[in-house]
Image 1 (cartoon, helix red, strand yellow):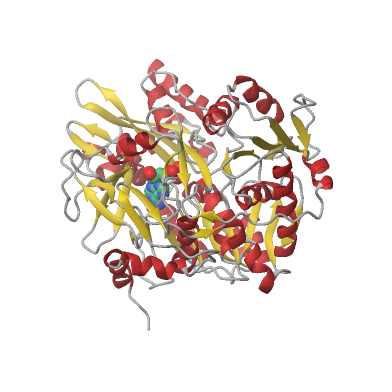
Image 2 (cartoon, rainbow, N blue to C red):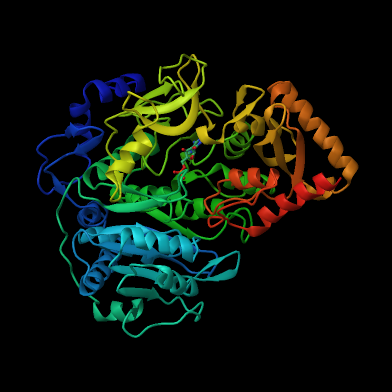
Length: 636
Ligand code: AMP
């Protein structure tokens, strides 16, 4: 009997224990849990207390009986030209060797291991090895520079750090070791040991005899080692992942073990529909939460083959991802709207060049998915494109569609419905009262948060409560800091961060709505809209737009005409209230490595201020373009 999603969702909240007890059967437990949930100290939720399990066991060991020879990892680097697969048996061997290495270096239960690596299989071995022995990993995205790395070292205080000589991007070698050296110099609490994977890419950065070790040498020493799994209590932390907030000091988002494993296993079944033997391709990076949940743990817990890709979506050409889908028979794919917008600038024939018959759905997350982009990719692929919404903090989606439960119609621009287990509310920003359909509110979650979500901020329980549960006086509600709206059919739409909202003459506007209007123009690839100060209206929106064909708009008259058309389009779609004060044309937007537009930096530059923290910036020319565009406009 099929169950409608509405009923499934209702049951997840009304019979919480029964629902999550059922989901818990999707993973192996060494000792059964005493209770499903301990909620004796709100808002701290303790899922499956007393139960012991292990993430590595669930991701690797338990598959050996049935699928030892099946590929677990398909590694493709279009940067180095290396392409190879690891079976579950080989993954088991590698993880054991790495676990033995860590133990030999003094890593014990509860100790932290900092992983600062590019997209190489060894990064996954290190993560799995860490949780195998009951230690806690803190993966730091390879794009972070020394300062950010040092701050994360000092907060997590790792016993060991694992890194590499270098990463590669767009054919350019990015040396890691000099950054590591500098971070170790800056840190107050540097790790005693640093293991470096030498990929033969770069020799720079010093090595110290007592601190530095070579991955290959240690690998030889521990070859053939077997390290028993450490059975740990469900609520013991599995990892810390830093995310930035409004304060500028990164927060170490902490995830547990049992609840996280259950949440991921359940999501593979109900959301992604990925099963044993199938292939999952998430185009993210292990440095982000998507990488943790859906490059490493989710697919492996489900017994799938996970694609680990080092490269960009347009090299050697814009067909590379679809070539991978064909070759590895990818069933589930997960990417970000920004990447699709990059592809949108290239020939759509690439979408038809390869056999994509294995692909069931494409999932997108991380930022608002504008309707033109959603339409372009879903029409091009002939597949459902499922927008889903989540955060580093939640570890899995808050809003999504659930083809594993019921196939529901999709609405472009909407990540559909609240995920089972989330008691989601839209609240008035100041009063905290629930808003009605078609009214904008803050997306909030009534605790307890479901399994998989953050359990605290590493070492800072008080900050956890204050930051996330302190937005609505007198109400214990988790704030996502996102605006949302629900239509009369129950579909939700995310309108951007509460902290990015702009207020034009007393009217609140989401920059996303204006961006979407601008992007609706056939000549525009993407756009960022920020609010800048205005003496009369408080704020006015300003747009930075990327034309699909920059050469065509090099003529100022052509640009002026396009600007005019864009303003008319916004007038038409939103009303004059949303009309940008001006449109600047650039050929790229400044973005983080994970593809988020750095709106705050754009806003600062547009207001004549310095752009602020740029440590996550992908390509510096994005910022330079904004600076130049603003300078040119003001000198005119
Ligand atoms: P992060 O923790 O870096 O993944 O960022 C989470 C934030 O990204 C959310 O709070 C949203 O502002 C935004 N976000 C993630 N997914 C979506 C989505 N599908 N639609 C709109 N915004 C999203």
